[in-house]
Length: 215
Ligand SMILES: [Zn+2]
Image 1 (tube, rainbow, N blue to C red):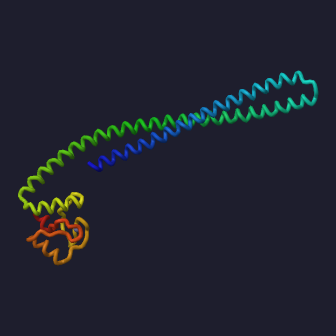
Image 2: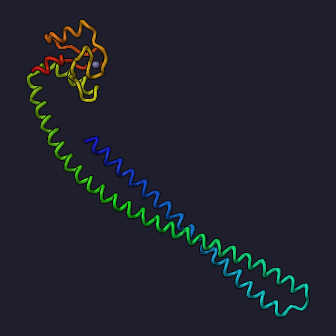
Image 3: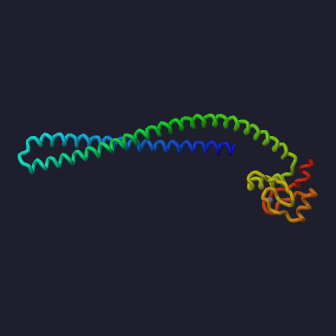
């Protein structure tokens, strides 16, 4: 159940990341659109000033003034050209951005659908696992009834400290819970099976693997 929850969390995290990325790109698009508006205003102004200068050129009284107005007109023309070029670049960038945003939106909606499907499936799996868990818990409850209180207390204590596993196999002179070596004398005692022995490293109760397999 934890694995399923982890997977769902991972999916959600991935989705959140994509949504954040999309939001960021939308902010960039807005900035570009506002810059485009600003550039358009600049272009209009330059063109308007150019038209006015042209009118002034008709009424100048000296060569000096004529030259000055002509110079100003050249500058305004250059400014217009530059601004027009920037506008063109911005338009292209905006179009690209809009395409990317549309793609990302498609991807996110597909992923959302997929996640919904996975979630529904997971709910079904979890329901099955919960049923199984209840049945195991009932079996454990029954099994406890025939065991001495002192041993049950020891079992519960170990279980609470060892991630739910209080009884493990002793196999090839190793504890299967912590994988530490079991001293030879202790291993012989475990094989005899007459006493209840614990792993000296992790304290889990040990049973002899070979016997358990045969049984
Ligand atoms: Zn151990």
